[in-house]
Image (cartoon, rainbow, N blue to C red; front, side):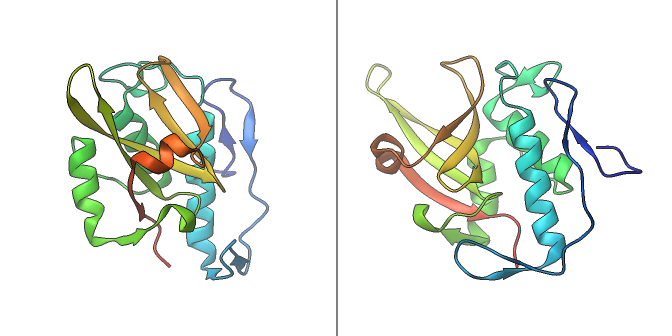
Length: 173
């Protein structure tokens, strides 16, 4: 982010992907509620940082575009760049920390919300908690271990609905 102009540059391409046009007076969300202009701007910046990280390589302990992103590293990076610091070390701690925030079901998520999924491995006979950032209606961004990069996918599929554990609103009204 350019501190003088507020322009946001893609981590992958180096091109400007967001150029503020000034703060709006208000905004209406898909659910019809009105958002405070600063919350709307925070959500927009969160979305731009998350989308800017798409295609960055996966790294088991990475937390930057240069080193790659782990699942938690991506979440930590995006929210820290947005001005919100998770200050936790794992996805489970992140989920616990946001347990006191507003819980949202999958059909009520807004861009900027954290999505949590419980993924099961029949082979290893255990489950893993996975987190993603909602970036659009029915779309999320997450760091994929199996694809070895940050990807954007729809969460409105049977697989994701079946494994959905909850969502938390980070940017409160």
